[in-house]
Amino acid sequence: MQKYLYFNTLAVEGTAADEETACFMASTLLHMEMHSTTEIKLQFAVNPEGNAGDDAVVILNCTAGKEKDIMDTLINEINYGQDAMLVVADDANSVYLHADVTSVGTISVVDAS
Image (spheres, helix red, strand yellow):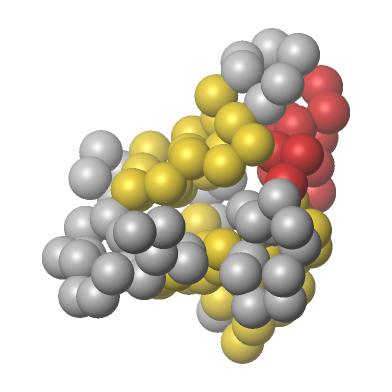
């Protein structure tokens, strides 16, 4: 079953590259990394040609020291979860895949227009 990762931030769209809501196929997740002590960066390949710089990036805010736990939970849900759509972080409804995800920092994508 194809899985999808859903993100929603309360931030108002500031530019064409910043989104309020995004949903990515889990298979496009390239990597996750600790971006700072309270941020996880998720990078998605969204361009079929694979052009560098065309990846989408989601920054998740989280409790310091819980990055590995959050990444582990996400991997387990992608691999073994029963739902096709995984709500990773939804600020509008205060729904998070892991209790230590505190909010969505930013969602940045290449403007398709």
